[in-house]
Length: 287
Image 1: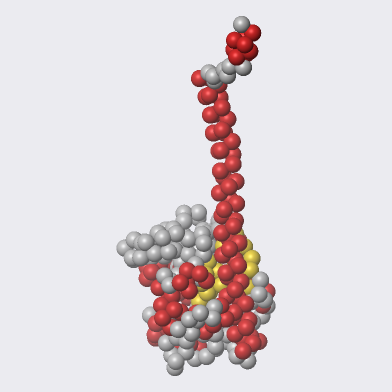
Image 2 (image 1 turned 45 degrees about the vertical axis):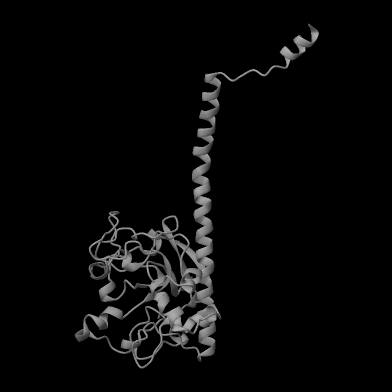
């Protein structure tokens, strides 16, 4: 009898249905509290990884200018044998096939090993970028976030040839368009290196400055009552924000400056417009 009593005393008691429901509810509450924090931590990690890659390209610019008498690389490779910025800076990023056009120029398709390792922003996806026009943006399964340059002049020349700007234009991008300016910009022309934007998060490998006529913001693509995109560029490419990704990292983006540092800037700060309709942040203005 004593043994039976001891066995009965140690017999496990099952949970009731109400107890199980209480436990499940507590777990669900804890999960709902933890998952957003985990999501933010994961997003922050991707932003840091993207900033690290961007800093590599930024350092490549510094090394390039040191090797070329303080001249910056060109943005366009379509005049007098001038080479694209990826081709020029590639050797400073990676020794493997960095001088091979199949690896660097082909990476303008952004699907080569070089591009995946050094140009992609980890926060991107294989889908259309936000607010894209499906009738114009045809690469709907294309990876939609890359480290890109701030570009100028491209469409002023290619699409509106009769309005060709003067050769000495204000420096709105250190990557001079060889078709218009005929040669690269010199380091001495930059007003404040700590406030001159070089790279940022883009859909492809470049965004168009909003300061020039054809990049001027005249559309509100995200519906926040603030102009944020060029109608000309949107009608041409079907991509909002002049082909940039200014909200990709928690409503902001990474920006690399000419003094070598990379920082995070909120969308409403970098994209803010003045009374004249122009962007006001000093990162856009270089000379």
